[in-house]
Image (cartoon, rainbow over the protein chains, first blue to last red):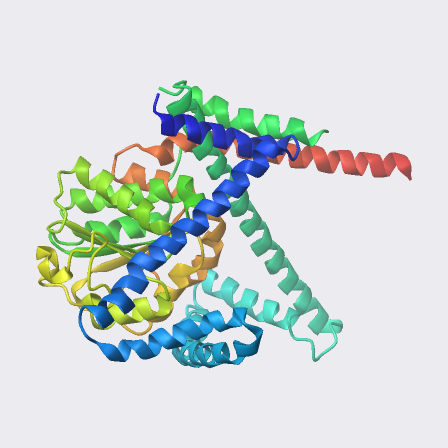
Length: 198
Length: 264
């Protein structure tokens, strides 16, 4: 048996031991996971971003204007120095400004206009009618400028039924997702580690 | 009922069907078939971009989906460009790609390519719409894209037939925001089951062309490509454990109502 399989099986059992109660083995495995994840992300970010996008252009290709975004990047570390924390706000302002400028039109188009368009068509089909009723009644539930009484209250009540159906479906999928993770670990323990699965 | 007993029941409901195969039926849903049809109709040599937008913790769900899709792509002799928009997906994506490519004797740089990781997914997705080489001057192995033969005729999304985001979060929504809305590119998603309901509205509106949802989606895709794999192997366990959970919920509710009746 490979040493990697033994280590992985031991760490899996350490994590599963939490199901009985919190213990040092679980803590060890949890801290190891966090540490390795952060270390891995730092190395990947440095090797695939800082080196090819900043260090190489400046020192190998002579693109010295890359120093400007480099300096703005270093300003972010000023958050650790209370005296110079204002420097980081310049970089954050740039990120938020550019980010919002890029994101707002795209989000409007993809998540609002296209979704509204999809909800407004196909009234001739049962699906189209259900979608329209679901959208209208759910929006009525989230309209708080009118008291939820009378016909409006009943409409909002129908909206809550659709919300419950959505929550139920999402919860069902969540269970499926979590069980899938357990299946993955079980396949490893029973297959790669114990060789019980043929 | 002690919670440890529930854990044991769930563990047994997963373990026993994995050891003793039950062969429970599994139907193919329309959204999975849509992904299959999109890939199946592509001509040999077409380019598919697969983005590994997930973390290591969701590997049991995303790997079967990625493997099934890649097997279909390589079987159809499609060229695959891969990347990762989450750092943890980098090594995993590279490993899965190499593993499946080896099954089909595919050559790196000619049939498939792994670009590596880029942070700032908005900038990366938008940038590739203009020029992939500007976002990824080198691949994951630090080879310049100018030297890679399959990249000679590929500049941006116009040269890519389909984008598939294999994700455990809402990254496919950003592919919809930027690659679909701005560049009108076809995007399909393979997401963990917990995220599936978030993407059905995009499927209904036609903003994504298909959807695989977790292990079930992988199992369905394996049926379509007629290659049983990790997805189908896990579905018996999935079904039995769901039955146990439903029974536990019913028992819990019955217990609650009985207790309330006798204490009133």
